[in-house]
Structures are given as C-alpha cells and as structure tokens.
Length: 125
Length: 159
Image (tube, rainbow over all chains, first blue to last red):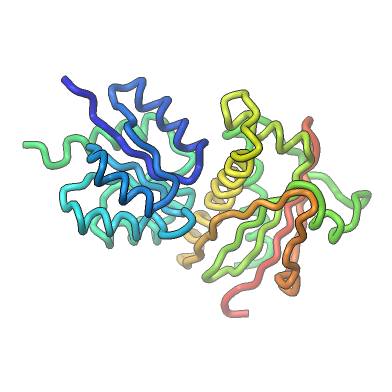
C-alpha cells in the first residue's frame, strides 16, 4: 500500500522539518515544500499530494487565501491549516472558507497525526 | 482589558513557549542597570512583529548573540542554521510566541487582533521608531545563554 503523500506550505524551515520528521515515522511521505502561497499553488498542480499542510501567516498571499485558491481549482483537495494564531476567531475564519481542521503551533505530535488520519479518511467510503 | 493583562499574556508566552520550544528557563529581571532603550532597540540581532485589530502593537525583541545562536540551533536539531536561514528560525520563534499571546488575548476578550509576518534586523540595521508614541513596556529576561529584551509598544483600538 502506498504512503499518503503530503505537501507542506510554510515559510518556516523549522516547521517543515518538524512535520517531515514526525509524519514520515508514521506512514506518510512528504513530497514537497513550498515557502509561500504562490509557490504552494504551483507545486500542488505538479505534485497532486493527498494532503496539504498549510500555514496561515506567510509572506505574500496568506494561508487562508491560498486555501481558497487551491479549493477553487481542486474541489477535492484535503487541507490541514496550521497557525500560531489559533483563537476562536481564526477557527471561525477557517470554517468560514469550508475547512474543518486547524491546529496550533507549536503542535502536539499526537494531535497532528490524529488530524491527518481524519483528513485521510475524509471522502472515503 | 488592562495594560497589565497585555504584559502578563506576553510574559507568560515568552516564558512558557521558550521552555517548550528550546527547553531553557527565562528569569525575569530588573533592567535598571542595562543600557538605554534606544541603544538596545538599534543594536545586535532583533525581531519585530506587529499586531493589528483590537490591540495595535509592535513587539521588538533584542537577543544576545549567544542566546539567538542557542535558540536557532535548538530549533534546527542541534545544528546552527546557515546565515541564509538563520532569520527564518528566529522569525518562527517570534511568530509562535506572539501567536500564543495574541490567541489568548483574543479568546479572553472576545476581540480580534491579527499578527504580521515577523521581520529580522541584524547588527547595523535601524528600526523605524515611529511606533514609539504608543504605550510602552519592557521585559528583560536572563538565561544561561544571555539576555532577551522584549519591548512592547501598544494601544487599544478604542483609545
């Protein structure tokens, strides 16, 4: 069975490396990193990952706008939002654009993995 | 929201998140003996982040050289990042700490403030000081890797 593939969109190498370390120990494969939203949109079209992990606060277009572009172009895209700003208002904004998952930075590894599992099953029959 | 709450929230964030991220303890100190504020704001390695919304603020951190090297090394699994990437690690450190503080502030008050992308200033780069008209507070921490000075300039939307 093939690993679930992930693309990380985050301007922080710290976050990208931490995510890679934890998810690749748990049956996922990180197939791409993008440092900003524009790069993330382009890279998604090339790589077609199963899941996108997307930071909200980034230079250029932020994660919320990037998510909206990805969802418009790819209605079945699965996105996990990450943010240091993880208050109820931000969660409402995430829900407002049609996404379900937001986890805080710094994250707990078990929360990240459990959320990825939920995303993986999303849309499965 | 009182002034004290803002300072307490940032103080808690710096202490707790630093401990979680890089496993060092900060001790808050009196900074009477330290150099002048203007001098610290314009020397060494600094990070700046802004909040906009119910609280409009500028947070500037000034790191001792040993401390910023320790923090970035710890965040990069024990290896000092390259000069090209070093600021990205400090940016993330600021982003996580200030995000933690602002999230708590937003949840406690039911208001909304947003964070900017952090900016890194290296030795020799001057900060724009126009924000200094706001209310100001300073917190100084000591650690075994040197000092961190946190300057908070802020105002409330309804001030």
